[in-house]
Length: 150
Image (cartoon, rainbow, N blue to C red):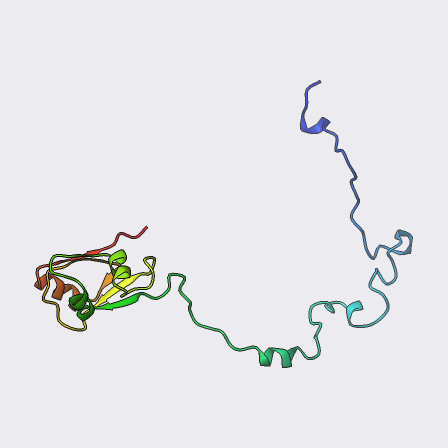
């Protein structure tokens, strides 16, 4: 015998849908399983059921709006800090910044800001640079490299 859709049999219980409001002979007539009177017995009664005291509860909940980025904020590092801590010709990476205690964690995103003066030639790797900071690093003879994003 070949199996096809027309000769497949269903196994297990096949319960018929409850047919409400089809007369008293059906067993679900008269009140149609809604009980007697009251808001829930009416049409549309289930939609606007009000919980007393809900308004007072909502009044206490603080408003939370706006946008929250999953990336988080960048950690700023100033040129004057790089000038103090690093030597001429050094390579500035996130790990190097953690060793010199300019940044707490090597997973932090770093932005180099142009506050201060840079005279040393540094090879800087960061997530972002301010325009003037990038210009100052290049002017001092160094390189401003943006870390590739995953």
